[in-house]
Length: 59
Image (cartoon, rainbow, N blue to C red; front, side):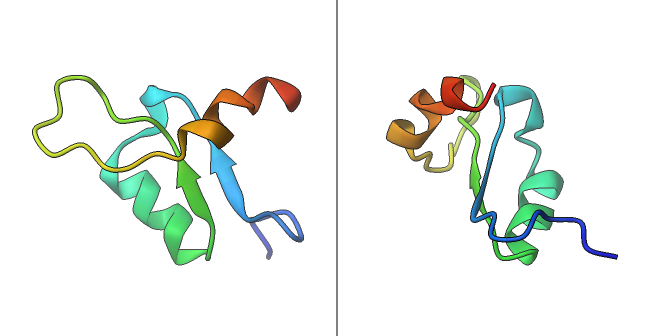
């Protein structure tokens, strides 16, 4: 069973999808997680802001 679309290289999501467990699952599938960190995180992870701001193209 394939859970990722063929050729998908990234998953874009809002801050609500930013749990470490979810991001790790995305990365195990060989995809990039483009999810901004929550403002209260002590060590926020990086986010590709250019790609994130273009998310309206697929919504």
